[in-house]
Length: 152
Image: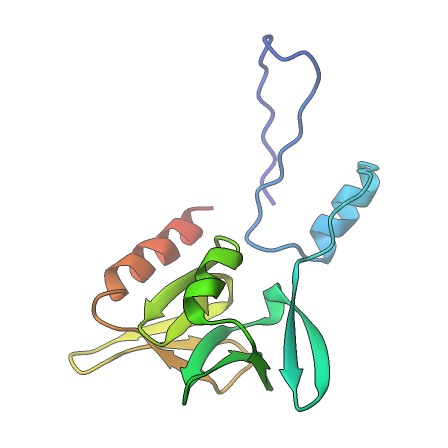
């Protein structure tokens, strides 16, 4: 973890900004030590399996993909249905998600590997056998986003 202090005499009171790719146990502990009140809980999305509603932490979702007019949310080891369309999800989801093809939205924070070849572009995820294809149109944008994450 990098720590940086900037002195700005124009500020009326101290301000603490935490920049992180994902909220994890270390960040929650830091917030607790700082006594930050009302730390927001991770955002959730209601998804379904049969008649059961599941409230998934967005950080656990690897990608969304359409299959036969149904949008599915993929986690590391399960698939859930969502009642949203991909274009609706694009507007609802935070900045860590991006469109990577006509039929998929990807959680950039969960990308483990990006394979580029003449015939296809494939994203792999850590601790999961799942993969998602990236169209040629979206590949440069995804590559740039991943490089930006590397800079943090």
